[in-house]
Image (cartoon, rainbow, N blue to C red; front, side):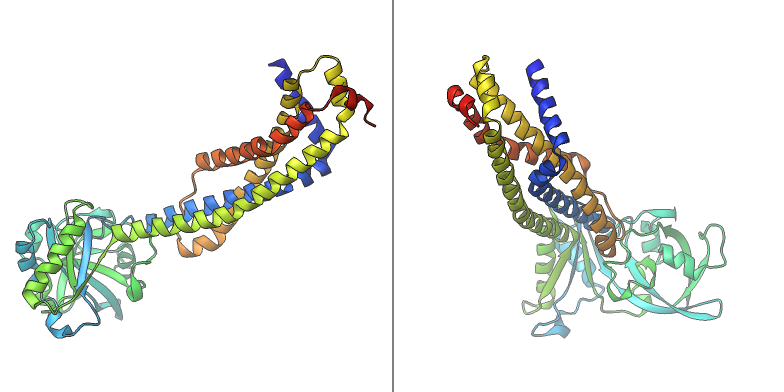
Length: 404
């Protein structure tokens, strides 16, 4: 144990008294570890941030709508009453909801404003954004066709600017009718990423049973709610099959669900991170070759020292251990510096470029990042430090003592 500590001390002393040479030796490793760490950190943070954007949307729901390009688009159009028929034909679906998303004019403080009115059913549907106050729709709201509404956080601010207290019980004028506010959503984390062209509008959610009263016979599509994410694909396929029975086999429909989207995002970012990481890891090999080269030079420079040590009783194992630890310490120090560089670079990229894509950032996990840095550094030290150490141990002591 004392010998190991002595060798570690000697290695650190060598680095300390030869800073420029040590820095140049470690430069390739620093760049390699820094690049790998930065790529892994940015990839991890970006994936988590994008998935966090999708978190207010249920993974057990899918949206089915007519394809834009098809032989008979008019025949494929989905009607309001189709939701009830599909619900009966697809027992695997927990619920089938008709969906409409329309812009409606309303008046606030003598000024015309356009709000986005979307429909929903009982409890949490596709949008699982928590409520800041109030309640969700219940079965009585739907059955009695009650004119009630849930406001988005933006709608609460823009449509009720003069209300300083609770918004519950307030009324809005929509499509010629008064709607009572029964709930207000918490501020979103997605900044409207999935909102499309209407992302900038205030959103008002009303019960889907009011669709006929809003003047709509045809709807945008159906939301299929499954018991869980695992059964969602089968429920979606069955719903599409049911729509084809209703509208004919020529009718064509598309399906979108958040689970497939989140899985695709995870795969895409995983592949990109792996490919770029492999490219960056090439610099680790370059750094390792540089360290092996300088260790071979060190063996040559210290040939006489090796001869003296062997002459006074040092074994081949002692010599191997000394040079191996020196290479390992060199790699670990370089890896630590690379870790700091990589984390700093990752934070810079995440808070400048990635923040433009995903306003709600999720930081990368420190534990795996530090583990990767240590593993890479130690791996390079073991891989490229072994040969110089073995070569030093194989020197003939007599020839080494004669070396000038």
